[in-house]
Amino acid sequence: MNNLSVINEHSDHFDRATLAAVRPPDWSNPTPSGRYNLVVIGGGTAGLVTAAGAAGLGAKVALIEKHLLGGDCLNFGCVPSKALIRASNAAAAARDSTEFGLDLPGGYRVDFSRVMERMRRIRSEMSVHDSAARFRDLGVDVFLGAGRFTGRDTIEVDGKTLRFKKAAIATGARASTPEISGIIETGYHTNETIFSLTSLPARIGVIGAGPIGCELAQSFARFGSRVILLQKDGRILPRDDRDAALIVERSLGRDGVEILRNVKILAARRSENSKILAIETDQGNREVEVDLILAGVGRLPNVEGLNLEAAGVAYDQNGVKVDDRLRTTNPNVFAAGDICSRYKFTHAADAMARIVIQNALFLGRVRASSLVIPWCTYTDPEIAHVGLDENEARAQGVSIQTFEQRLTHVDRSVLDGETEGFVKIHVRAGTDKIVGATVVSKHAGDLISEITVAMIGGIGLKSLGRAIHPYPTRAEAIRKVADLYNRTRLTPFVKNLFTRWLRLTGRS
Image (cartoon, rainbow, N blue to C red; front, side, top):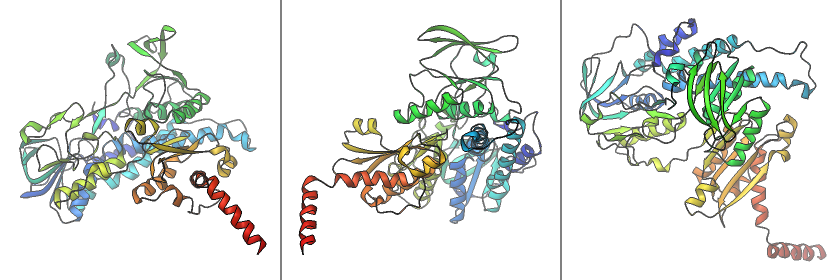
């Protein structure tokens, strides 16, 4: 996969502007400047945060990027996908407008080429933040090219040797190739190529019902594609709360997504005008005919070509091996982001980069295990999660109590006509200490932050109940969950004491 595929035969001035920022065609690599305090390999989120933060603190820093600065997040991930999702939500709002007493004369029509043009424009505007010029101006020596270790304290790029005191590997991960006979010859898309489309496919087969598969399946269905979602397991979003996943599954169904579970894809092939997926299901074998195949079947760490053996850095199929302080088996080489973490999120990469800066340059002893990392799947409704769920708590032997508030009793959700969802918070049994939570709602990714802050700050569920939330907002659901907890403290004994006190004070 050529990660320069952000630029293709359909490229316009927005794509060219993006490329000029994150991979300037006329860029000249600098002359290495002595021994660097820190050399960073990889210019995605983890690498950029590490380089900028270290340079801002006075370190001499070099940054090496093989493909595009900004990494997946800017070029193939968060930025283009969320722009697409926003447009699809607008399409759904237009479709459902009659529920709010609005009539659109003649209905509505999705102009997919304009949807994609908007995405490219936003991406180009945001690319300046990740640009080679910006990092050069921050004092970072930016090298565009493939970096490889040549020793325990040296890296070669563009025929030049960079010596370092510390190094950070932040080369990220890439989309996996599905293990399906004929899939390469048939042709397929991943998140690294799907955003180059300029016309809307009539029929799409989406392989994998994880976050990427579900988000894009829903978006394309809302644009007007006929979408078939193929999942090898018995449920979609297997990492998420089961109740939450069922809500999203119903939402996908209402948007027209056909979901096939317990599917084994036997082979792929081309026909004259389409692509065929031969599948095995519980109901027997069948063929699925589509115009485009989108695969979201996991990610692979980018370790190839780094010559990690020369640096004494151990790795396996899951990526670079690190300890809890993000040190590799070479104590002067650290790693951050998708290359070494099971949390494949931009915000996790950012947080890990900050740990690398402290531990690599300032003798820090910050542990990655201390991070409280929330995540969100940006379907409609969104699913956001932090900490333990019921299954994880059970597996770890943590006794919990769960308090849940359905959105049917949250006034803002009722007013907005978006009542399918909930806030579920788990506390350690016998206490109000929050150990995990799941939110299913519009803007769940925003709501989960309040709970995350409470967990980091040791703020219990009882205290959340004392926080005043603006009315009417969806965040009121969090306060209502806290109220449910506080009612459990009103035991019959305590209630009897209150009753006796009120009677006594009423007679005086």
